[in-house]
Image (cartoon, rainbow, N blue to C red; front, side, top):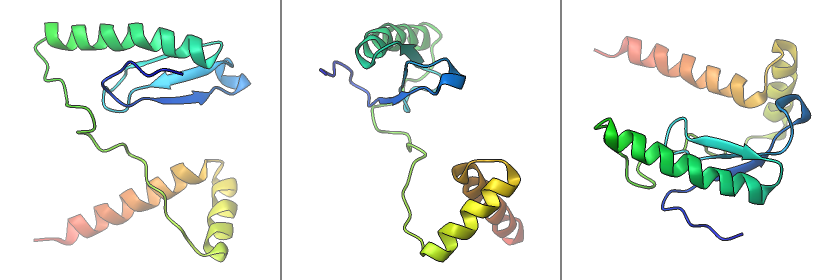
Length: 118
């Protein structure tokens, strides 16, 4: 697949509950997403969404971030297997994904620490 974008994009399959097919998103351009039945179709549709997003932002006078300027919101952490098992069990109990659970734990922890700073 040939990439013709200045901005990085993420391509992922959509679950049947989400309608199936493929989703393309541009992490640096909030809300800039599209989809398609195949990866190629999603990328082709993504080109249209990408161009429309950039044009709308410029016409509205909004600042367009440079590619790679915004944090992706994604990181990978290695944890002991025992912690991984506990997180998996807790996420299952809460009915959320492990990513959502860990994100809430991190946000809660940062909030406590920031609340104690003077």
